[in-house]
Image (cartoon, rainbow, N blue to C red; front, side, top):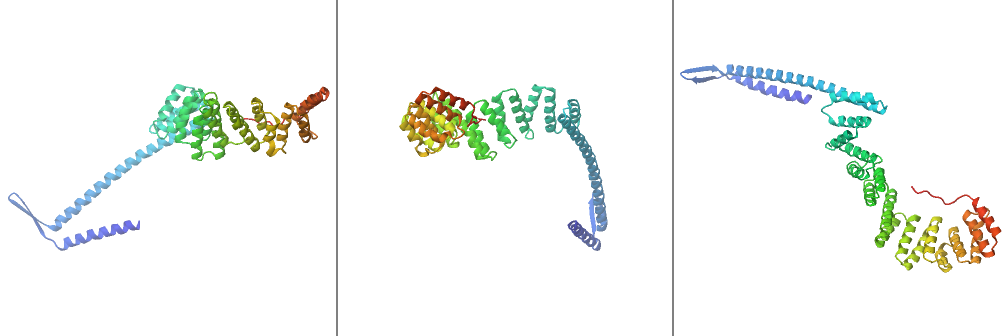
Amino acid sequence: MIRKIIFFSIQFLIILFILTYIFSNPFVASIDIGNYKYSFSSNVLSIVLIFSLLITYIIFYLFFKSRLTINNYFLKNKYKKLEKGYLYFVESMIAIANKDNRNAIKSYKKMNMYLKDDPSLSLLLKSEVYKIEKKYNELSDVYEKMLTSKKTEALGYRGLMEQNLNNQDYHHAFLYGEKLFNLKPNIEKLYDTLIFIAAKTKNWNQLILISDKAFFKKLIDKKTSNLNKSIGYYEIAKIQEDNNIKDAIKNIVRAIELRKDFPPFINLHLELVSKSNNLLLLKRLIKKYWSSFPSYATRIAISKIIVDNNLGDLAFINQIVKNNSYKDESKKMLVDFAIKNQKWNVARSNIIGLIGANPSGEVCLFMADIELGENNDKQKSDSWVMRSESTISENLWIAK
């Protein structure tokens, strides 16, 4: 404000100085028009000039003032229309939330009268109305139209993804979902939806790629990324099992690198190596996995591989468990194969520490086999079998 006053004052003083100079030093100006000569004082010329500038200023002032008034009038009208349009939009959304379909459609139609220049809100509300009316073809057209504008592009992709999901068209659902992910990856549960679709369509390569992108964009942590990618590599290995053993082994190794202690992965790796007829590698892997993960599930998987490949002699079993022979699972493995080899003394000496006051069902069944195999004592064997039936199941896990 002060700057304006100073600037105006300087201008006024300059004009005043010029006028003072002109009026203090008058001169006569002459104009020849034909045979006539007109003379007049410079003061008269100055007055005419000043008067002309004043008239021009007044005309411009009135013109812009009236134009501003007209613009304000139209802006107020436009603002009122927008205000009413947004009000009807809110009313319609509230009606949709309350499942008041009749009022939702009614408010939507009124909104369209006032928000013709803002198609984004109209398209959004139109899509919701078409959902209510179950006009799915028209709804698809609305979503396609949304894709033509940057404001509504994400809404269009999301709508088309959800619509195809509802129609169980997982291929197109994934295509639209992937485009939405590239555009707006932070949308809630979008990554989980894409993982679900990839699993449903067995598109394991896409599952791996999407997980990499999600981790790169910090949407998921390393653990989640590794978990989902490991599933992808595992499923790819299973697909390749019958046609390309080498690539199948490479992929299951990748899965194990991401999730080292998961028994199904270990089991598949051992099965694939077994199919490749590389017994030396198979033996080495069995020792390695048991040394690293001596668990119930790992024991069940490894025991099956050992039996299927005729590797169950006690000398090899002792090699497997030598690094953790003190662990219960190692003792159970030794007892199991001692029974299979009818080495009853080995079986009894190793099962003693496993019985205790409340032996597990598996230990009871081991004892049943020992009593029947060593002493042919069916009564004691049946007693142990009955005891196993009253024990609580153990080592259960659920795969999600």
